[in-house]
Length: 396
Image (cartoon, rainbow, N blue to C red; front, side):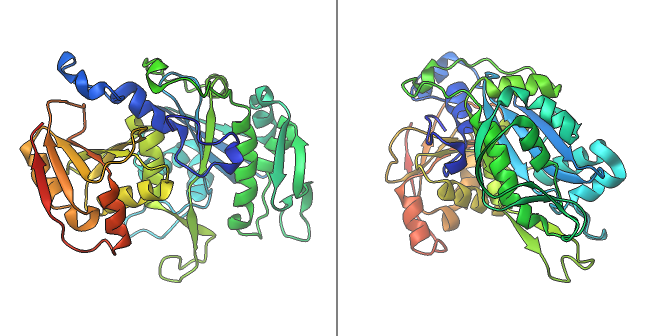
């Protein structure tokens, strides 16, 4: 977020720090006053990296995307289940991204993740427990509270205890061993809280920024993609690090999971919200419809997720999401420069609520319109969010 919303990554409940890049490098509080000086404002190049952790039997045990800030100082660790359902054609049988790892190695996993999340990954690394321990050596010993025991092995009766539940201070080697541990006979959903806690220990090693620093004080240079994992961890830990484990639901019905796999459907709206806020430059368009930037003046991730989900349902490409520091206005305001974009957004009122349109000369590369949510959006949600709404126009 633009300012730190929590001192402990483990208790983070709001949007990721990655939202700061929108305000720093796109439009800050005074950006709208300076657009005449700049022909077009470019979305900073995102640096997004894939880390795949493998267990002793080369099974995929943990998957994380590391989104570095454009300044190359800090970022966000995005954890997803190894059993996430891959994006397959209607004629293909459902499969896990871990299955692509088994059959196609790191290249297969990378391709599946890029298709599933509509992103371009700059670099990818596969890591054993020992390799991950070496990579995480700069993290040092970190306090961790594990909600359940971490086991490793085949069946539940053969598994060995790796880390006990409860509070402890773990070394990088112990963190790595926990992330590389897996029980074949136990659903991954059992492990996900422990995986989140262990990645949280890594995030806790990041350097907290000065809370008094304003959004305009941060540099606006972009990061050069560095696919080497050691360079990524150095850049990541040099600033504030946030953690987000994307929500998922286990698929147990025969229609969506006929083979009875340990299969999980990601929350698509949440995944888009996180990636559009932490690595917008890495997103690829899913269709030829208009592209939108969403400003969230509410310190509430659920509102951001709801807005993004609704817009994606309507077919819009949400390419940037940012948390703004200005207090929310009453109306939801749409800033546009192309009348065709306005015409398209006018059809969104049934799901967004009343919209106020402001024609502007600002041009953001790859963005057709910028929507600033207001209290009308929250009121629309509270009222059921399915009724038609009026539109007004303001000259700008």
